[in-house]
Image 1: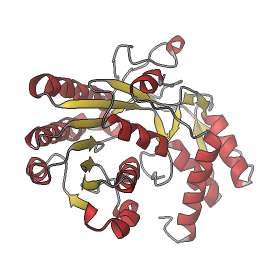
Image 2: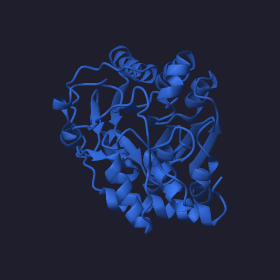
Image 3: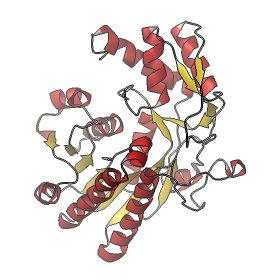
Length: 321
């Protein structure tokens, strides 16, 4: 089958591209390389030959519809996004431009090429706003009340998916992702804490923890997430499914785990909690288990070890940046 991945040069997108190519699919990637990197696709480009085509295109461009009409993918994985909550607060117009106009371009392209399905990367961390801690782990039945422009744009994108399904019979599945981590995650800019800790620990630099470190997140490994996307290509039609472990991990515990793996015992620097940061976050993956046959399988120890090894090799090769 021919697949298309928007944001396919990013951390999650490139890992998905590798999986799709390994399963024998032909893959088109759309990425403007503003946050993604061709280095993430180096292995795929070297081995896939004509089965991989990378298009340096902004997802907001009208060219997207024409490109999809020509390439005619059967399944579209839409991961391209403005994904920084703080950027969305500072510049909500830019956030909406990328996340809403970009999504509409992709949906129009999918309609034009008669794709069978769009699999959408939604945000489990922002979709439900700040529900009471008694609701954890969060279920999809909770009200969707995002409190950041980024969360609002992701919720509105789901609304568009629902509308296109009703109006044009364009099937979709939406995956509300927890805190995804793994190799290729960029430790610079708006990055996951796992990538940041790995970079700092291996460089011997001070590690900053905001707040008291007891705030929790649901850390889910990138290979597990990619498996959910592949399953979403044929299952979970018309549904939002949480993709997480259902387990809370504190930032302090994460730090201790990763410090122990590097064989050092540094003391983190604690700074005031940043405005708007959730105290606790965790997603209930039960629906994904039922509808997609999916569950996470990578524990935090092996997952963080893989990140540390990736960063260690990158630093050794002089690509530390």
